[in-house]
Image (cartoon, rainbow, N blue to C red):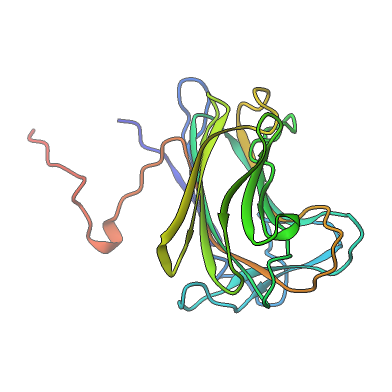
Length: 249
């Protein structure tokens, strides 16, 4: 059985291994708790654009202690702003989960996420929360156009899960209200934005892309996790050895 070396960088645990085709396994987990409040997330995150605020905030997720990232447009100039993260290309089945909250009695802050490959072919562009879509989460591809996923409310935390299949150039999206998990919706088999050109994932971005409406309220993001395509983690610290078995000499 192949074992993958683990590299710990700040708050990230990244597990990388090479398969026969050169594809890499990847695990990225980020709760933003280790970073200084009042500044953008540091490297390996990067910051793009000056049209909005991107900073670590002590707004807590789901009643727990910790921090999140605040995203707030401050200039209504049709320019994008975002935080992002690049990583080694991942092929096959890739899972991305994150949580978001829109505040202030409005859902007019457009909060989006997308992945792309090294040739700039888009995968999930856009997954949009609020913004021009009103009180809803929607997703877009060149083939299906815009697809409504679920209505949302401000001042509540929601989870988003993307189940990405680079071989099929499709993804499923599930959205749920964190404090009311029966409020959930799933849309399956959305095609990549640039299907079938995109064949790997090597980037995540979170931000507000090309908004023109004037709303100064904030959006928050927390507990992001990307896994793909095969990741192994032990549970030794917690005493979990259930997945291990003894072998006689």
